[in-house]
Image (cartoon, rainbow, N blue to C red; front, side, top):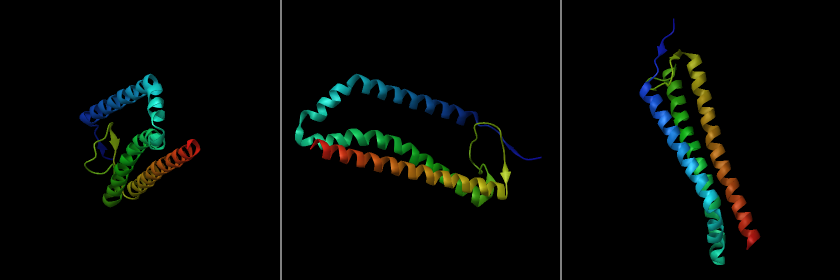
Length: 146
């Protein structure tokens, strides 16, 4: 019979609190944008000499805010995958699980670790692509309005 790693209630509670805080922040940002987008546009257009810089700020800020969690998850998945490959155990030792999870050992654990590292690379590439595309869009917008 395989070993079961027991759920960590404190970790589950922390994840729920973090999700709630992030939800509140997203709601505050959305309401703030809906309420103040007119003022934001006025600020962008107030000084023609600074309009290009302000357009870049307004477009890049949400892109960076989207990219940061992707990079953070990419780092977390990479380290967890590397630890699974090294220890040949998944979930790796010391990782808190949110529900009772059977422990996989051997090649199956190494395969899961490798899959986590591939996902980590994908998340990091996605973050870079988002920021690059937004930067190019901002540059095109600035050139168009100049």
